[in-house]
Image (tube, rainbow, N blue to C red; front, side, top):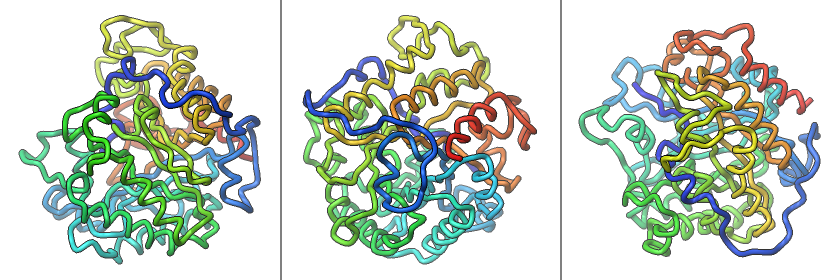
Length: 417
């Protein structure tokens, strides 16, 4: 059994693509001011006026008997299982919001209809989050014409000796219609739930991987307006949501797994209550480093694959987030970093996380750590890389009393109180 590491597995060529894009001019949205804020009242206000949402992702996927084996598949149809104490622990650590990275409510294969088991699972998660006094962003990983292997095979293409991928959402108009219908149904179901404060339309759109094109300008020139183009699909989903729910905020990220390099090429819909999202794991060669741990933060190394070493430090992170500043300024819309993180054993990980959090806070960005794992020990080996509660020892798979990385995180989340 495998779970993906953080999203943005195929994030490439940051340096070549990280310049600002889009139209110039315009006023940036009001984002100044940080600190605690009431989470009651209008949902859109939570995404305005500085950082108010500080939390983490939980990750669940369907279990696939053929891939996971009968023993794992028998545990639950959606794995790993979460219980009330998992949400309570997240709230006690100081978070005020959880992004539920979850299978979509419709089946992955035609006919695209509601899956009552998946729906029941999501309902239970939302109820547990509400009990813990956490707000929820619903984020769909999979759905019509898209299964979890779009992430799993990125992590290990040789896992099964053959691919079980279903990426037909990028070639099948009926599957795209299924995503539109799924989100219309979802919005109708949760629009009056005060715990649900946003709908994140698709975790990491990635059709560019199918055509092996990692240059955003080239991709748009070749495929704009086709089924491969997320910029023609996400406005349709947004319109379907607004037809039944005028108020709940919408979150949408860009192509190439919501890479910051592709943010300038994400076309805003014009919807007045949409937040645009980035998944930030820069520099990827450091945040995803395994043995030997040669790279440290801060440090000097080739961060972007251009063959030239550079100083990677707080200033580097400031510059790496430049596309966020440009996008907010050019389009007068808010941006969130709804996934970010670093493997817990990286040298200097606590300093990295501190500098990144400081940079996001200065910008007034809401942010969601990847990730918060379940307490179920059976799944610890598969979610441990980014679980800050396990400390810096790669071999440890249980909670530690404290660690520098955890201290940095909880210190930031203390601003919620």
